[in-house]
Image (cartoon, rainbow, N blue to C red; front, side, top):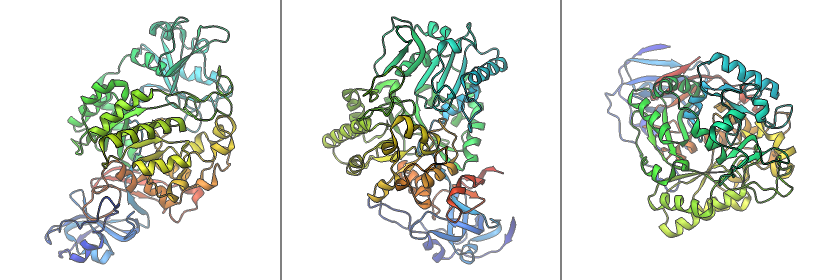
Amino acid sequence: MITLRKSAALTLSVLMLAACSEKTPEQPATAPAPVAASDPATTIYANGNIITVNEQHPTAEAVAVRDGKILAVGSQVEVETAAGDNTTLKDLQGHTLLPGFIDGHGHITYTNQLQLSANIASPPVGQVEDINGLVAALKAHQQAYPQSPWVVGFGYDDSLMTEKRHPTRAELDQVSTELPVAVTHVSGHLMSCNSRCLEFIGINADTANPAGGIIRRQAGSSEPDGVLEETAMYIAMKAMPAPDLALLVKLMAKTQRDYASYGITTVQDGAASSETIGLLKATAQQGGLYLDVVAYPHNSIGLEGMKKHPPSKTYDNGFRVGGIKLTLDGSPQGKTAWLTKPYFHPPHGQAEGYVGYPSMTDEQVQEYVNYAYSNNIQLLAHANGDAASDQMLKTTRAAREQFGDADRRAVMIHAQTVREDQIDGMLEEGIIPSYFVAHTFYWGDWHRDSVFGEERASRISPLRSSTDKGLRYTIHNDTPVVPADMMRLLWTAVNRVTRSGKVLGTEQRATVMEGIRGMTIDGAYQFFEEDSKGSIEVGKRADLIVLDQNPLETDPMLIKDIAILETIKDGNTVFSR
């Protein structure tokens, strides 16, 4: 790091070099406001690869930052004219500068709370390889937290465990018969409970399945086997004791650091409750948010509950509500997603021809969609199966026809199995898909061999089809379902390699630059923030990351190994290694 002692005026040519932002037809290019010649830059980044993600000026030699904003972008000679006394030159030492990554979809408050849960995931996220290992991990967690009234764990994956099934109530009784034990599937859409948990929450042989959910039963009996699908989970979740708010606020520092270590500067809370919104507001009011967090209240709190948390375009100490979120179906890896064609192999207890099921009726969905569209509120809708995607397209089309066209940017979350005609439908309706392309690695083999069969599995997260048709998209990890590792996410988009090393759907691969756009400028566009984030351009916020290698020049198979060296939020370093 070198300190410059120069006094020179910022030339107009430097300002104009980066004046053209990445724009869409709806957002005509406008020049940024001039910067006074006497305004000094705080930091100049140079001597590395600078990927601006600005199509009109895709690379630069140097970037000047002042007061958390990008002051100049261009050649080093030109940008250095922005330097005033005591301006710092940050030598990139041949490393690569990119815009900060934007979390297209995830759950930061759930991720935060899971610090209090047992990690029962399979490698590479955890160490559980079979049900005996799961039980041992839960026992160890219970011993570490003996005062906890429940034993909880997150991340078990039946597709990866030796038994290839969910743990039963009897097996979880091995952990404890006195305390409720509840473990959540890696998808977040299924849960298994021990006998004490089922007793505590009032689920027994006489309990009917709730709308949009299933209580799995023991073979040949109506007695619950412990596994709860979709809305049946809510019965247990509502009964769990809430962690102390002050503790959760404190834990947010570590959670944000984890996100920042992956280069993320804007984070989503994609299924917020009133309690989690309260947590985020409390953290923000205490000055505890150093990343931007955008929350979307979930339909589980009801329409009246959503109305208590109106959206805002501006942040308050790093927090804002962005719109609303609906869950239309379940999980493909858990085989609860709603499809138009049967699962390749149906799940336990289901007959041939099983296609999953919806979480809500058309009438229920339409009520929420009408509320959003009539008030120009952004709508996020979880739709994994193509039947759920049909439901979203049908209800949003009806709402648009009733309430008129507007720039609402509704988002289809996951969109795993969308068909070509549904890509056309999203283009017509102005819907942005946020693809969970990390599935190609984490569950690609499972999808091919058990969930969809090879033909359908090969086109999950159809990035190439979307790009070829001109459909803008984002990509995400759905953290905590998988870690917020953005370089691995980019690697999955570009390579589509499964755990076994096979390629799943070569024809749907993205280019490296397309993947980067899905985590930067197109992510900013999804959040209505493309004028202030997502690319390195004059006037935008200085949300930046430094990588040890240039992903555009690295062997595509090595992209996942690229290290985040530094994450910069509004000009301040929030992570470095």
